Image (tube, rainbow, N blue to C red):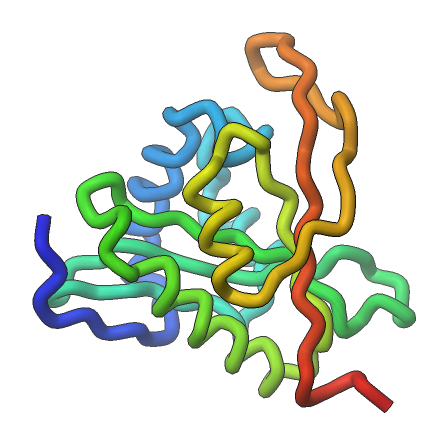
Length: 169
């Protein structure tokens, strides 16, 4: 599908059905997350930062989403968050991820986050390319860090982006 009129906006509760469908598409690839099912909204809501939840719309249809979750509840890490970003299969490769990541970065800084990190499977070449393009750097490989629902142990690559605007002094 062709992107003609993309809008990035704050995610609302009424977006959850579309967001969860796009999340399920990502799960089906086998290389987006260790999760095996889309959580209920109540759980997802508790684990994602309210000021940093975005959707991309094309003609009022949600075609992608991005959100942050805290990496720790320890005060020293209060400015560090993990990125989740998912694009509908029909709209991949059209700049949706880039647009979402640009706005998510701005929202994260406004909310006081100085470091964004992402754990990415080595097979997820599109996500790796997006993160590199958006200023994330590879900081390490966690070898066989988790097991999929199929029982396969997988590596996870850690990328991070440090804000140039906050948390620098």
